[in-house]
Length: 427
Image 1 (tube, helix red, strand yellow):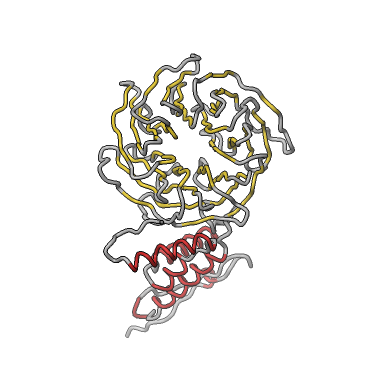
Image 2 (image 1 turned 90 degrees about the vertical axis):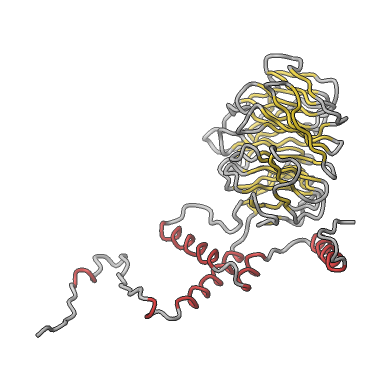
C-alpha cells in the first residue's frame, strides 16, 4: 500500500534574518492561473501610467549672455560640453557640477560652428568674422567650485568669407569648413589644403562620416546635399531636395546612412548608395528643423526645431517617441546627444543650454538590483501590451504647447478634407 505524504523541511522555509525574503513556491501550470492575462494587462496599464507620471526629463539650464548657436561634445570625456553663442563667446561646461571651466575669447562675430579633435584635447571653431581658431581644452578638476577663466586661441586661420559650419576629421588633424565653398584645412597650414564646390553659392553645414572618415557631406543654399571623398579630392554625389536642408548627421553604426533636417518640417534618412528615394521620412515638427544628431548607439537621434521643441526619434520610426519643451524655451538652433546616450543637450535662442534625460522617466542615481529587475519587468509588460488601445493611448500621449497643437490639428483637418492627397503640407 502506497501512502502519499507531504514532507516539508523546516530549514528551507525558515528565514535566517528578518531582512531575508520569504520563499514562495508557485505552480506555473496555466490551468491553475486562469486570470494571469488579466492580471498582466492591469500591471501593464499601471506601469504605463506610472511611466508618464514620473516623466520629468528636464535636468538643468546652463546660462550664456547671448543666444546659443552651436554645441559640441567631447569624444573622450563624458562631462565636457562646448557651447558657442552669437556674441562670439565659447564656454567649456562641466555638466555634472554645472560650472564653466573656461571662456574662450577671440571671435568678434557670432560663432557658427565648433568641433572637437579626435584626441579630445583640442577643438576648432568658426565664426562670421571670417576666422577659424584652434583652442586647447582643459580637463575638469576634481575639486568643486567655480574655476571659470579666460583663454586665448592657440592658432588662427584666416578665411576670405564668413564661415557657416565646421567639422573635424575623426582620425587625422584635418577639418572642413562651410562658407562660400567647402574648404579642407590642416592644423599645420594656414591656407586650405583643398577647396571643393559644386554649384551652391552658400554652403550651410558640413559633416564627416564617423565610420568611413574620408567621406563627408555638405548642405547648400541651392537645396542640395553633396557628398565628397578626400581620397579623390572631388565631389562624388549630389542630391537636390524640395526645400533647403539646414543640417545633417551620419549614423555612427551604419556607414552609408545619414539623416537630413529640412525646412519643410521633416527629417529624411537616406542611404548614400540609393539617393533616388528616402529610406524613411520622420514627421511631427510643425516648423523648420534646425539641427539633428545621432546617439552613439545609432538606434535613435535627436532633432531641434524652429517651433521651440526638441524631439527624439527612433532611427527607423516615422514619428517621434518623445517631445521636450518648456515655457521659456525659444527657437532651438542646436542639439547633441551625450557620449553615453543617456542625456540630450539643446541650445536655443533664449541664451540657455538645457540638459534633458534621453529616457524621460529614467530614475537617476544608483538603483538596487531589485529596482532594476522591477523596471525591466514593467518595460517588458508595456512592450507586450503596447498594441492594446488603452496602453497605446497612454504611452503615446504627450502635452505640447498650444501653438504646436493648433497647427497639427489644422494639418489633420485639411488632410481629412483632401482625401486624394497622401500628404498635406503646411501653408
